[in-house]
Length: 199
Length: 199
Image (tube, each protein chain N blue to C red):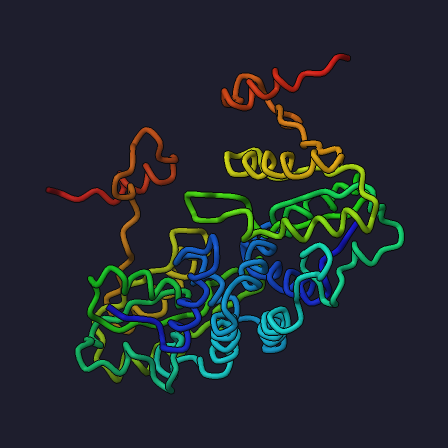
């Protein structure tokens, strides 16, 4: 049985390490590089290296940034009296895509998970307190995922912040837009009932 | 609405150009690089560049190679009296994975497609003739895909090679292993009937 020519084999092996990329996709991508103009391949290779060299965590909110402080934290349009707490930069970006939120963010860089050995002091929680003081923050929106760990993290934040007189809110749990009662799982339906609101 | 930090945006844009990679996968892969050790990212970046620099087409069969002549053509174990003609290197690799075929290959680098303006003289067809002479080839197996273009290419090869006294065979069309008559499309079922064999 033939194997790939060595440089090709190496590339396929490296591509297979990427998340969600199996042998078939890795081969397809490797063949794409062989056909693609040299400049295209070079741009990707450089982009990979550049991201490793230039992307840091924002000193303020721990989002990804290419400067000491990220775009959101630097923007004069954003309102620090409301801070939205998320687990990961990707959650921040998901909320930014909605263009609905004008406050600041705080990225915990994970969620509390005793099973995985992730305790509160391993997350960027204590770093939130001086920010609340500086911005005279009145509301913290906890936008961790509606999972066991996400809820545990939300609860931890409530217990930490409420005694300081800060309003802590939680993003709503319920049926997704376009969802179908008939197809919803029980936990979602229970949430949708519990979170009901007067019309 | 926030955009990615610039180096991250560039990487996501480059990743989205890859086949089968949408915005979500591109973001996931980019975030993977941010978390991954520097050495991992560097290995992939280098593998991409190396593949562009070192992979050439085999002078004999037009498969991918890291030398002038590819592994298959160089192997003393392979039997040149049978040559299997495929459209692309990936087809060659698919057949090699079966470990069933001990002959040589010939990669056309495409199929005849008048709609896309691909004519026989744009494929590696004429390059097949001196190889047939040199190896005293007695059989050409045409392993192009069972598509309109694949069949047209097979037919073209039959008309070219049969007058030279060479046996030209076609890979079988029929139901895939584990397939279900009930789910098979009509064209496949018709092929399966037409290609039937006495047991």
